[in-house]
Image (cartoon, rainbow, N blue to C red; front, side):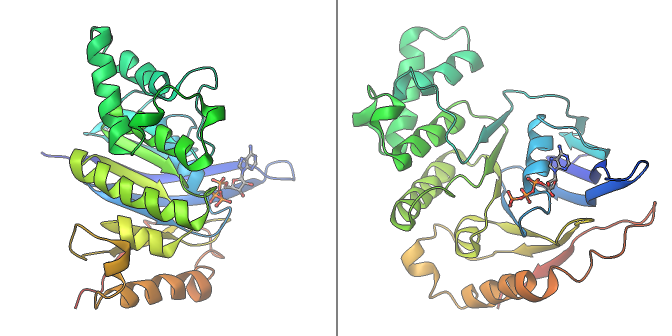
Length: 283
Ligand SMILES: Nc1ncnc2c1ncn2[C@@H]1O[C@H](COP(=O)(O)OP(=O)(O)OP(=O)(O)O)[C@@H](O)[C@H]1O
């Protein structure tokens, strides 16, 4: 039997509640799959558990219940097969841009020669427009440039799954727009599978094949899976003229403003499934 690339089954995260014996359920019954090469964004209000899900997929946190399978195998702990890009860049400050990228490349392919590592790393720095800044340290780079290095580093190790936690959250709107287009370019070349958290509905439509919508926590659910079937390659300036753009945008905004609070008052019964409703608004 062939398995989906990534399968998330009845995932739940809870913490001990304030009172003894009580449970604070962040989210539960998260059930979804991701296909190889898909770009999936997740949107939901603050605190619904998006970063927790991402950290569980990265192997940096443990679920309280449920499973994550990659190629049908239960994942356990961090792995070079799953790369992560956080909002705060997490670069090594004493290394140059090139050395930061090369660090991951060397770990991924320990038998490669120095020249192979450098050539490969430079190729990815070039893809994010940073070849000229290869010798600069993070303190000599702007926030946008640092995030480009993080993206180059993550893609350069060619992980099977790339996890991005609001990678553009700390950037100004102009820089964000430029890097979004670079991300489209690098993803277009590598076709890696991406799971990304964002609060920005326009960013999600621009980048995603599918957008997962989470209800508010506690007891948050992955309630909907919204297909974005707008043709690629996509450009920020053109996509807004596509007939489906505002249909999708209005649906997302309506969910976040009016519907994200509807379902979270009733805890799931033990065997209840919460598979997200599939939404396809294509004309
Ligand atoms: N160690 C902990 N103990 C208790 N509750 C915790 C702990 N760590 C996280 N939480 C709670 O888990 C919930 C989900 O946190 P998480 O960071 O995953 O949410 P998020 O949807 O990514 O939020 P944001 O959009 O603000 O980043 C929050 O309510 C948070 O307070």
